[in-house]
Image 1: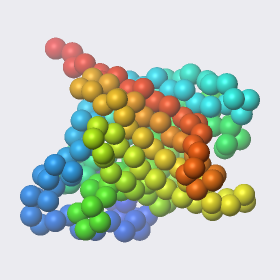
Image 2 (image 1 turned 30 degrees about the horizontal axis):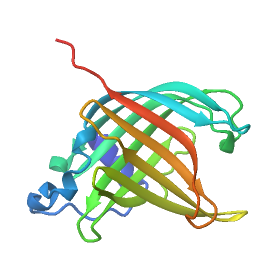
Image 3 (image 1 turned 90 degrees about the vertical axis):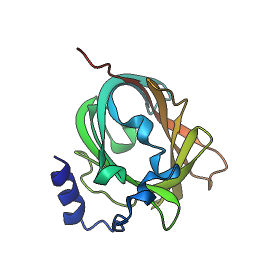
Length: 189
């Protein structure tokens, strides 16, 4: 499966710098900041509806290291209902993310694709500060520039909080549109 994931990245032409030949770069404290997330997780989601209320749905994800820990792959599955994509009822999607720490820029890059949008596109980029990770991506819309922000916070051994926000005023204000509270799946004996 890991080879398949890397082939997907190559086939879609994503420009990812070659992994350092010296694995020391992959073992730096900053390059290991996502290690907390390795494993399998149950997810309680809250997704904003167009009327301002929230829908609660379940999901799960599994995160594994690649290239001796130089990158991580995520395999996500669950139901979503994104009003911004015109969804009027929950739909099952499968998602894939690839993330790695770029030693040349000193930033994390997060690529995401799913069955609704099978295109890796531009990455979210950012870093961790203290015990919180913030990652940003921007795009042009009909109404102008929109910035999206992913935040990993409240990181504990068995739980983590994730949210996605958007800003249409260059980051002056943010609107949370998707929340995921993850609980680590315990291994059965």
